[in-house]
Image 1 (tube, rainbow, N blue to C red):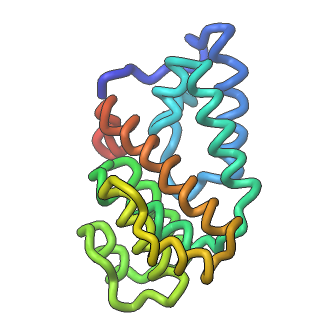
Image 2: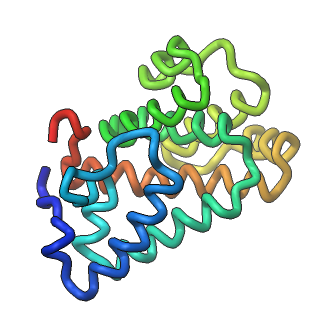
Length: 188
């Protein structure tokens, strides 16, 4: 880990409000996995965001907006997030969203296939479209027109927008985790 965890007692005046807001959000939305050290220090992507509170606040606000304005079903969102995590090989991202997907009842065989960066054979139509869109965007370049049109037909414009933004957000999260070598809690 390249950035030390920041104990709550060591937070600067600029970090404290972001910490308070993130901790509140984490406790209400991200409780399927370990995100805090025993002393309350935030782990995962939240720690790097605290190190740069102006940037961290902007990313956190985007995360909250993506959660509050979600129209896609959770299973579709988790497929896209896991595709991104697998493409970036982002350990903490995979750790966290495997836990979320398991809590939501995603079968172990599907999770194993997704984290192997492969497309599961048991996806429903919505999940399959989400997989294809996320996979194509993570390869880089322009999203192929047939995938875009299929997403529009499946999710509508708002859902398609959300899916594209979700891939972008979790690409940034995965890059942050990899750039700062953020480990899973068992290895912290």
